[in-house]
Length: 250
Length: 311
Image (tube, rainbow over all chains, first blue to last red; front, top):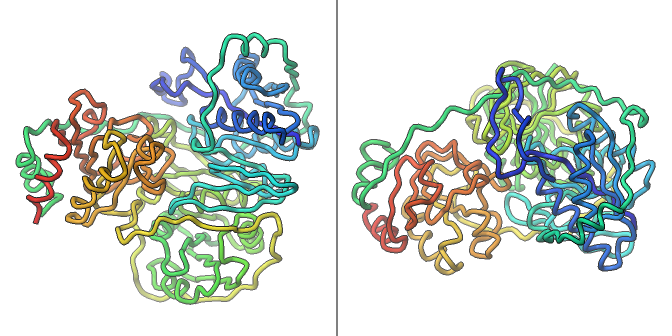
């Protein structure tokens, strides 16, 4: 079974982001970039499936510039077999991203595509479901557990009220919740080895996909700050404030 | 043209988040219709028809919609999509699973987790766990959006009552099959819409202590109980308690964080609460930067005292 893993390069989760000077976009010019944490769980799950003898090959994919090779190398160091960089200077919208992944699916013919359930930059959580629609296959979103059995995949999903278990017919698109697994730490030998693994580059234009979007960002701004709070000395003072100042208790 | 709202329900009641989606739909300025799909949902359809602003309820009552599988619901929505220039659902696990599939089938971009609708095509949504807000224009022929339920008032009952129309089911998909649910049943208010939420972090130590500390206070306040991701991952609290970027986003009148450190991903889920109270034994906990009222104290002693002082 071949697994395609889609990964996104995002501002590292420890970095506090700010709007750019003219407030039209996010300032990512000097910040540290990393693999989207949810995508790291997707890679980890694919690698574990290979180690368990269920997956035969893992192909990691991202869309971006030459700089984006670093997150592909990260996936290769974790255990992906090869990587594909689809070159694009512009950040694609979710639908366009799903179309690019769909074009790669047609080339690569995987049984499963694994993605993070959302990227920590736009928090959209759309691409996996969109890819499943374009590909006309089943979807297991917000997945916290996978069990493969023949042509079927049982997936446990994190839903608002608890958990739901579905049986999916393969092929399928899976989007990983943080609870799916604990990604491994990379060691130096893994990183050295990853440099020798194949990394192919494709031009976005060669995929023949319409990546235009009807969405246009007008502005980016910081939300209004909360008024600074106070420390109370004890429970009596807290209750007094909640009753007479905040008026949230009677 | 009209706006279609996709109803979410548990076959007993319409979820409050859908009532928020109806309020959001009203801001688009078109007539509002609601799709209620499920099995034996007559009562849900009647509840929906009584909500202010709803013009028509379209009901598909069929066993194949007993569970909200995206593979079955998306073709159903597609079969009536030509009647609408906007499709809205709440950004719950139901809406987030379903609407991107619908959008791609219709070859439309979509906008998720909308927190404000400025006009029919201009919206605000958070980025980076709520650290930034983006304003964007959506020029798609069909506007497809999920809205954050806490950002819109829930629609109330009003006159006149909407008409109810029955629709036929479409062919069932065999791509997926529901197996089971593991739902944590609770008599408490729904976490996403509760007026008061009491939540605990990993420092509470154990599931017993978590319940022992938070339940009496939550009972007194008729509050929902929440938890941090760290507490859920440590097995101290059930996963449906999780509040934050990857759990439920809440905005209650009163949020009481007990032994919560204040990780960014947790703050993303609570920062729109009206009043935030933090009780923590660690005076340097991040949560105090967000709290209107901070109390550095022993958790057990202060919660016991707080609970006993409430009427």
